[in-house]
Amino acid sequence: MNMKKEKIAVFGGSFNPVHNGHIALAKHAMDALSLDRVLFVVDRIPPHKTLAEGSTDAQRVEMLRLALADEPRFCVETLELEREGTSYTVDTLTQLHAREPNAEFYFLMGSDMLLSFDTWRKPEEISKLAALVCTVREGQSGGEEQKAIALREQFGARIILLEQVSPLSSTEIRNRIHDARPITGLVPAAQEHYIYRNGCYEPQMLMPMYARLHNEISAHRMDHTAYVMQTAISFAERFGVDPTKARLAALLHDCAKGFSDARLLSYADTEPPILPVLHAPAGADYAHTVYGVDDDEVLNAIRLHTTGDAHMTDLEKVVYLADMVEPSRDYEGIDEIRNAGDLNTMMRLALLRSIWYIKERNYDVHPATLRALEDLGGN
Image (cartoon, helix red, strand yellow):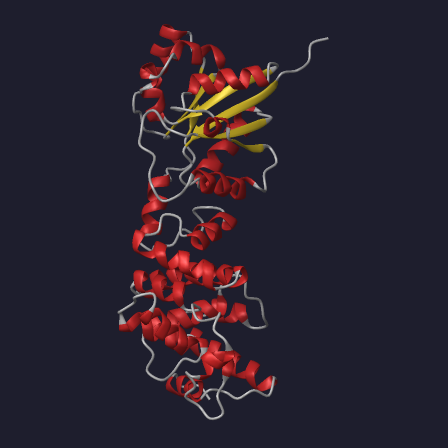
């Protein structure tokens, strides 16, 4: 009795980082070819390009695991990372055949890979080990069909052309992160959070700050900081604020959260002192003296992120709001704040919600918070 062969696609790449375009392609191939599994093979040393900086091998693997967590038929494959030397496709397919002798393999590739296929190591062997599945942009001929005909004649290759489902690229994702532009919707949410939490693809000047923060604040606080960064960057684009300033202020807004109460009380400017808000002025001072931030706009955004005040700049409002409505926050009225149409309306609703929360618990409202609400026409 002959057993049905399992149909497995091999999707190789640097995945630096993986993005929704990769996932859409894998799903498209799975449906079109009735595949049983897709192996996302993370390469170690790509033979045809230089691996971009900004993440480690371990981080690329972890981002991939997070991105694929909801699809059990998608698997992370690390055999190329475990193998010494350049990551050649023929070696990978040979290993996989030895491990899965009863499988039928398909190799997913982009148009540029198909057009250069005859320059690869042992293309004739690859053609025997797997069918080549190439994505092509609809309505645009880049010579893929002619190349497929030539490769079939030259190597006996089995080639399947599929419509491309997304033009998104890892280069675009890296550039957006570096330039403090939003990536929400371009990568899975869990992976997006990981990127901001670990500083993947951020400018090098931020990396010492990340290292210090990871040592000085709790893991829970670092999770919150990553969400605030994500939200501040999104609001900065939405409201025309300098995104690099918003990113930096969001990164450091809670840098003094690890301070002792006694140390925080030295920053009190009210009588009696309001301890829960003092990490903001302390953080502004610490960001300047220890983290080396000299930008007064950024420092003021950190200083006001807990209380607000009259005459706030848009940057200060963006950071205040990002802290208050980041994705892990959940309280009555938060969706009304998030869905407000303009920055000042969002601020007014957020300040009212904050004051209500404080009064419900019989705490003192900071005078700056009352000034901020009055300045925006609230009561």
